[in-house]
Length: 202
Image (cartoon, rainbow, N blue to C red; front, top):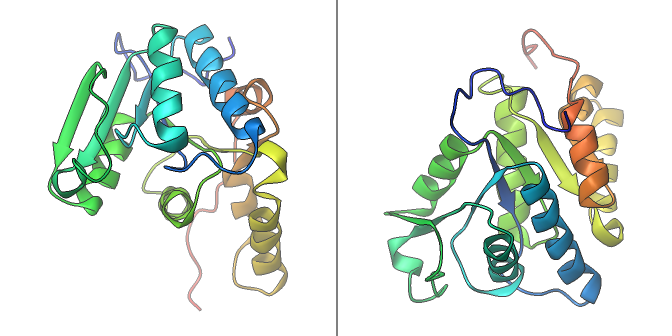
């Protein structure tokens, strides 16, 4: 199978949380990557969990996923309902009271995480679930869709952190990167990071 292990999921459809921009970005390649990701979700019978918006790449992913019969769950803070224009066509829209609750709920709903190109919020969400993996709060797969090499600087920064002695090299294995959705999901299916048993004191 091209899916990560289904053990523990029972009969519930596994879901992939996708973090991505509320802007479209400067290249049509980002929009194509969204379409391709929706195809990959559908072909693997994966549900989508995302931030619930109609804006930018977020809205395009929801539309493309719904078109391909992917079950879509949106999670949006009450204060951003009007600002972000919550998508009206989702299978399920969860309204929460804060950004913190939004991230927590997306984490709880998802069985794996994928970050597409996006801004500060996207990177913050990605780094948070990566931090939680480092702390062994979860063992869910974490991936980057590296369209147009967008995350090359971030991956270089993580390596720099290792080189400078602020991060264990094993933690680099906690995140996998793919140039396109098929490449990424193939790698996520083999997700097997080198676990660090305990965190050393600084």
